[in-house]
Image (cartoon, rainbow, N blue to C red; front, side, top):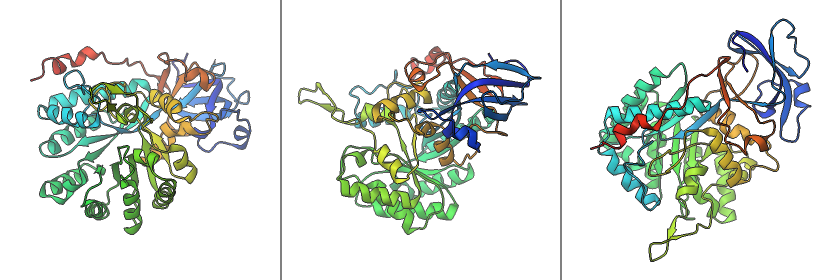
Length: 442
């Protein structure tokens, strides 16, 4: 489908206008009900050279391919993952599917982690993401005790080895009280040394205000961005998002702040919600919803006989209300085949498809496609990633589907990933690559 030349033109392409950078007026005025325009895209030397309304390209002297209104999307941006935990399900399953059981199983598994174990499982996740069409990934790394050096050194190695294929960022994951300890100071030094993001799990406790204040003081002093796990619970009393937004305004924080999960917002009274939304908007915080993991863990209940009960809510945060308030909203993979989520394949298309169904992102779709492309790229400080535009690298995905209903209805295993103008030939890794780690683990 893509010619093996450095210069070619893709004609009659459907492209989401919301992901176009510097689109001209004629394209903006030709949008259909799904937010798509039909264009001709010319690529030269691995870059987008021209994007014009279909039929207006000057491509007489170059190879052309008529895509017959198949869609192209920019490569995905996965802003919240846990690559270090990935693919341990078979050796450390979550037998009940609850959040507490996920913590217990993970902590026990971490006692056996080695550099090789972490490296190979993380690399497996990178391979999957890359083949599915992801260009940038932010991973949270469990960061306490011996894992500070172990996990961060593995991440540093992988970031170097993959720098020509994937943009990688890392966030420290620890409970916020950890930053009040001498060990926390060691972690802070590691984050600063490796250009990481300061992060952690915020949960309601008597010292929460002190913990949040300390984290903001560190971030301002070291000029670090922030990325929190927040309110991953269905308890209305959990108002960590509110407190973080309040602290961001108090400290006049100028760095980027991202808050993931924010589940309890969906079960809080309307007046509390609106006040929180306004504070989050004023503080410039971006919110990441993790639809698959939250659907899996939240509202997991049992009868007294230990038989499961049907959940009453979907576990996600108020994505529509956040977006309507002007808060940037992204969706991401979160955990993959580990005790926090027993499924997944590091595929942002699956994330988007699940988000559409769970959160009713359709009717209309508007610009929700930005939630797995341009918006997470902006939250990661990547202004030229997750979008299509003249002068940008020709990194994109071709789907046979002409309409979103077609793309979102089939698995899209026949998608074509293009990087720097050339078809990506890599294949998904086989699960058996990890067999010696998973089935012969100490």
